[in-house]
Image (tube, rainbow, N blue to C red):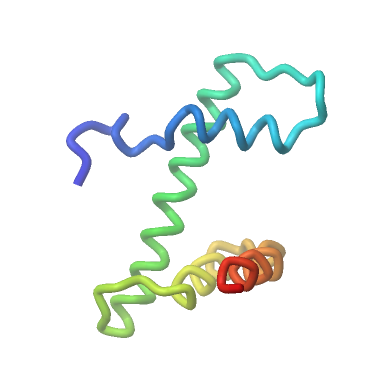
Length: 94
């Protein structure tokens, strides 16, 4: 487990790249906004992982799999992201 809460944050470079790809050219994002997005993304990942882990535990498994993650997304009421996520997973498998 992480020694400090900051160790659980996603890397700033990754967050900055995602933000730049999501916004049109010419849009600037303040340092405080990037930090807030980074914290929110980290909390989301931790929550999604925890939910997926609950599904793995129900199945008496120690390894999370794609089905656990998809079930977690549905449980977290992120159904609208299921199809794009499944498409992205299919692209990875190809």
